[in-house]
Image 1 (cartoon, rainbow, N blue to C red):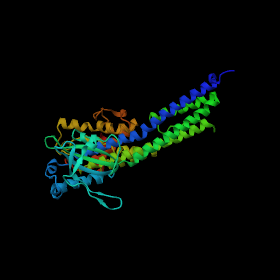
Image 2: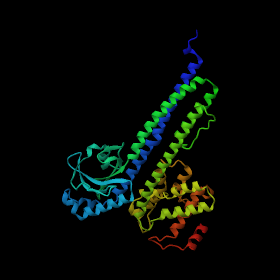
Image 3: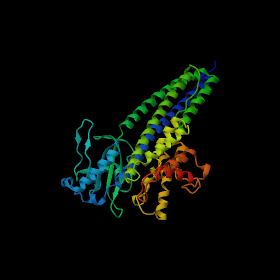
Image 4: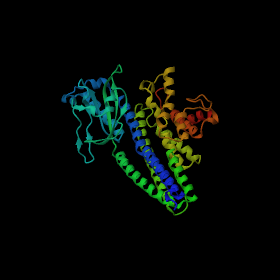
Amino acid sequence: MKNPLHSFGFRVTLAIIASMVTIVFIGNIALYQLTVKSQLEDLRFYLKSIANTSAGMINPEDLAKIPLSQEGEKTPAYNLISEQLKKIKAANPRIEYIYILTRTSGGNVWRFSVDVDVVQPNGTTQQGAMPGSVYDAGRFSQMLKGFDGPSADLKLEKDEWGTTLSGYAPIRDSVGKPMAVLGVDVDAKNIYAMEHEVCKRSLLLFIMGVIFAVILGTAISRRVVGPLKQLKAGIEYINEGHWHYQVRIVGDDEIAQLAKAFNNMASGLYESRQKLLNYFFDSVKSMVVLLEARDHYTLGHSEAVAYYSEQIAMKMGMDPKRIQYFRRVVLLHDIGKVGVRDNVLLKTERLDDKEWESIKLHPVLGEQILKPILSDPEMLAIVRNHHERYDGKGYPDGLIKEKIPLLVAIVTAADSYDAMTSNRPYRKAMTKEEAMEELINH
């Protein structure tokens, strides 16, 4: 009697089970990487950026005037810095706590300089720590690194303050020596809940995958092989960033049901990605608001350029969904200026060659900031190339004529028009007619 363990059907069943378990396992890892870890890394990037930007807004001389005692809260310097921190918190609604800590001779024992009060959802006020209050910084390794440069927690922290993620950046004195650390905490309970939900769904998907593998293995037919390959390809497509990919398998058998489950998972991933993208746009837009607030002459510039670009795209008959995405990217076209020093960005006199070169780097820096989340090269080109010129004398790539992408050309025209029709420290605004004539001439 033939041993059933040596049969072709049994070996195919084992092969299908092994393949499906491997695919589902890879899919679970990809699911985790593309949801929780990706969102966590984007949040860490945001925290480091906002902490570094905020630290640069604090006057070290005022901070040095605050005594580390209860009397410090009554000083004008404390009130001034506290108001600055409140404005930063108001401009970034996701910030739960914002504070400044000073390192002491006690190693990991630090002391609060400023800690902003927090208004709870029920209307009560949670008073911040008094100047001089002791804090054990050794609990957070990334906080200890805050004196060296911008840093952020590597994992979610769940403690008496809730589930948060924190970012830190040094406040430096006039000679560049770090004198304190500015910290910002954001509520991360949504990511924490997502992490648990992803693990639960991953386990359920793994169990379903094994069950379906056993069922499919008993069929032993060529019809099984094709759909399995499609499912495997679907996971690879999603892993490569094709979030809206759908497996197309006709029928009502177990394979088709598995394909439907996969498509539901893919749709869920796509929706999660869109929510993450919305969150990223909102976060970076807050940085743009802070950036433009540094110079009242450019306040509202990004909104104006986005509006003009949207109107032009509509007139040209572009797809409405594409226009919506296009407008959001245009709002961030100048995000790279966050890396330009105030003494250069706000200078009213003519820039020297070195200062001009630093200004010309902001489109490249903007591209680097947005590249981790924007996978569309056409949209990234808007940020990188919105200062290109038709005659090839623009920057940073010196593109000429038709080599400039259409969307980039739209933003360049809108950006130029808004700049010409807005007042600047070195000239008055042009009339609409004068601006139009300049656009046509150049």
